Image (cartoon, rainbow, N blue to C red):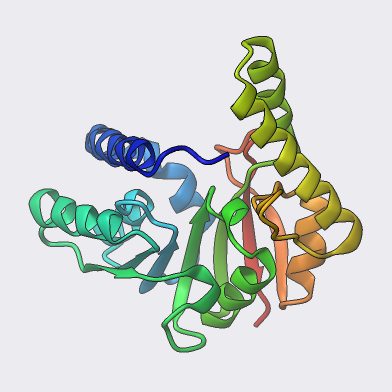
Length: 237
């Protein structure tokens, strides 16, 4: 059962507001972004795409600290508008723009970005189509920074929601685990009214999906953790 649209809108507005406060705090502590910079060390970074960008938090180290040109893509026009306003006010010299769109149909030419970031957005997408589009727009030799929700994330959520008797949250976590299990076993991500299509990913699943698209997993970022692993992925030259 979905939350009421008004409740969802309020929660999303709160998320954007807290993200803005978090980014302002991080800007004052540049070490916060070091894991992203370390992940692309030695790579010439001129153009960066952030897929499912929110207000563009991950664009900051690239556009402000490396002088790259950044594009934030998000299906929410509200997020894009908030991102534009934030950068215009707080980072006016940054070369950044925001595009409302879907990862499954990226409105960009092939081989045009040196770095693509996708942080905790893939679970809510059609994984095969999104990864195919990301691979298409990433330059040969480019880097994909991908953060996922592992099965451990939803198992923890299920346990906590059952323990605290939050029925709807426990049902949601159970549905995601079911969709993820089917996806891992069959190679197909379901999308039905009963189960939805939100899914978890694992290193094994990513290895299978990435190899089909000329992408290879090179390692993990320093800020990775078991529940939300953060991977460094390269496109074959």
